[in-house]
Image (cartoon, rainbow, N blue to C red; front, side):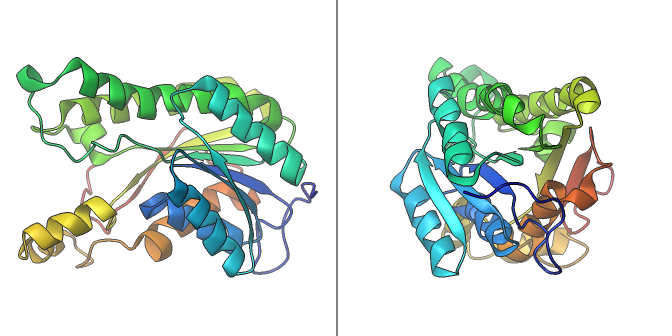
Length: 263
């Protein structure tokens, strides 16, 4: 088992630290797991499906440390168990990244067609998941100057005409992060939100259905491309888990190539 040792050696700023990532089975979540492990962290991949185990195997194939904890973030007991895995495997927990979101997040729906089931799924995974992570992890984080990173979206800040449930929960997460940052500041625990723009499995499928979509989206981004999860998004989240981010709290970090300059 490994204990926290503060700043890591050059090039490995998360040496001696443990990071739990929800929704780590694919996309941005998998990229975060790989990036944090490459920086020296022991990673808990908290996800409901076997792709979480695959992420842990990928980390270990690259020489990193990872363990999969089968986790439905909407269930408090599952999240508490994942935190316990971190403490048991790595001697503690230094950062939690709540990346999980509803698998139906890309579905287009208008409010008069939005079902209770879909609303509850968004709320359960994104918002209740954030609450469960915060409540379960605080006892471990508060003794190690810990970090909580929550994923939001431009939809939370400027709205969307076709995904009101998604926008609602992502907006609530941003408010939750701000409130926790004030509450937890005296404990030495920081809280930040990240709003990313990146190629995800859902977007990749959309590219296949609409071959012109990628070019249209790229024209909207000043840097001329949609972000790569592992090289563009994950390093920012890794930094928020590092000691160098100790004075950042209550903020939303927008990582989008300049797409939304007013956020």
